Image 1 (spheres, rainbow, N blue to C red):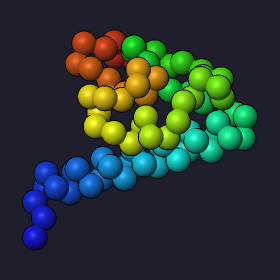
Image 2 (cartoon, rainbow, N blue to C red; image 1 turned 30 degrees about the vertical axis):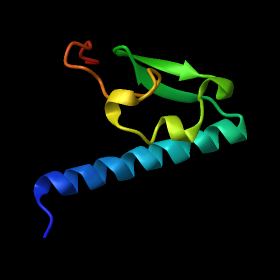
Image 3 (cartoon, one colour; image 1 turned 135 degrees about the vertical axis):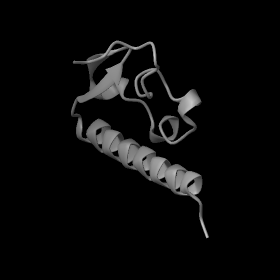
Image 4 (cartoon, one colour; image 1 turned 60 degrees about the vertical axis):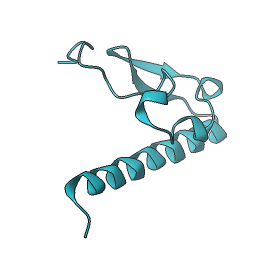
Length: 77
């Protein structure tokens, strides 16, 4: 039986894959993407999006364009 931590890891992995797929689709279609970077929203041109493999990694290795906010990031409110 899986514990809560394993479920959290599976959910996080699924979310990362979904984001990677969505960003890859936007890149292929020539569409821009809006992401969170350094406490702000940023619009990325299709050529700035990168490759899916960059986004399906451990959170500490995510490219700066797509990463989880740090505790010292500004509150977006």
